[in-house]
Length: 207
Image 1 (cartoon, rainbow, N blue to C red):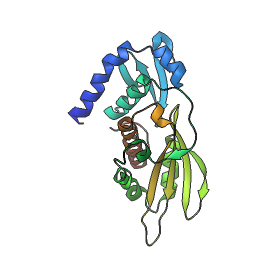
Image 2 (image 1 turned 45 degrees about the vertical axis):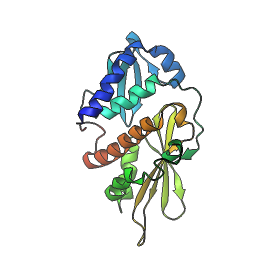
Image 3 (image 1 turned 120 degrees about the vertical axis):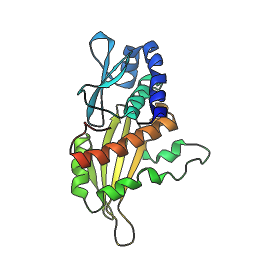
Image 4 (image 1 turned 30 degrees about the vertical axis):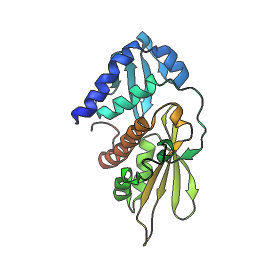
């Protein structure tokens, strides 16, 4: 596990200790528990958020970037509702930067090539909901990654000319709640969760 990613998460813990968690819960759609802790489902797992940090309630290992994403979301000053209209993450980069970051999802096409059944089973395990079949062998799924950040995941089965591709689209209002870099972290967490859940058949127990 990268020391740099660990340091990012550790730098967020003092900010959590100063955060009004109950106010954040009401504004961000998190669930308050006893003792001023919060609860949220993220990629098929329940997490507890407290002034001391972020922990999955199942006690199993977790990648540190999952913790960081949840910390960033909890600390977000964002307000408002999702638009339920979806765009590529590059729309949030600004100034044309990172206009082509398809490489982030390339491993998904290789993992699920010719195997839409496994893809759909994996999406269900992560909390996804089937949204319908699109034209040309494409299937749309919706996933509430966080209460105010729904995603659209499109599976394109490909053909003789083009390989299988999985596209991850973000709600148009996602940038109200996370900056581009944090949304990129979230996307990476989802890509890892899709691959590892497909490989292991479980949403927990891996990092």
